[in-house]
Image 1 (cartoon, helix red, strand yellow):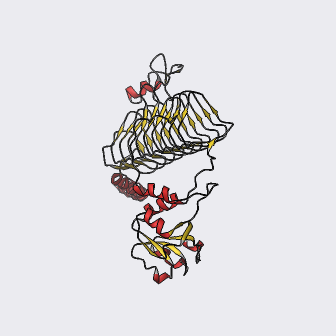
Image 2: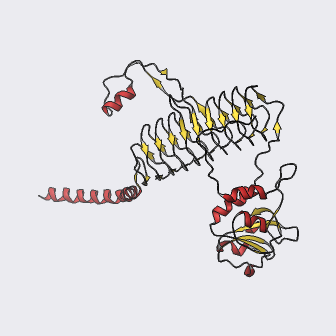
Image 3: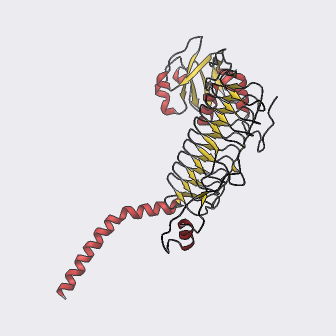
Length: 398
């Protein structure tokens, strides 16, 4: 029986992705077979020139490609004029708009109005994905009450708990575990070693890289009396005295809710909420080693780079970019369209649209002025020392 569709779902993928999936034939063993220049250009909504029937078997940098025969070959990624010198006559290539394929002696070309977007489509066309055999591996342990949609590929030693619902077309790698009552949408890809705890809900086309953990308990503890942490928050640093303290766990009863088209990197962790769910919006991409604490809310189409840490109950808006090693304090708001530069530490609310940098994070232009001032400090210190010497001499004479 097919799984029920989880909440927070909507179709967000560009049309060319659907066309690519239809135009990239697979061999019986899952290897990508060739598609023609014409088919590839049509799927990418790009203009093409030359022999459109030439097969394309892969993609590479220009210096690693060469002339092709009737059987086709590897297409050169020469998407800027600076790469043109490496093109060989008789080859096939992807060029930037305005480049002349005849001048390079090419047999065929596709033109890229936005090269990196076209690269996304091209790499998708030739990516066979992980090697997970269709069907359910005999070593998988699946509870009788779980419902798996049609077309699933479930690898060795997978464990799927009671009352789990998984949509059609799932690909689940070896040693994945999915806890009781979780709901996953259509076309999910869970790579080897992924851990999804109980009560997690995710939409369609979720991609999770190896060893990520979704839905572990939040890091939430309390002491019988006011803790040192609570005291210094109240007093802004003053401590009346040091007391022995014992920590008691606050259990996590909330789940994790993930939208459509979300990708989660290797060894990332998303804690479940204490009462309400931790939430990740549609289209958000989370890099390796990112940590989201309990009750965090992340909006749509955000980009969270490696080693970002977001503390409990922080609220991240839509289309936010947090560069590598950014830290976000608990219980604060980061508005829509904020961009935080690498290693920034966000301790207070950031209004929508602001670009911040530094520790503590401030407006980027302010941080740049701070850095300029810091670089001038040695010179100022030297000037101050000379001024002190002059004043001392004058005082001695007086």
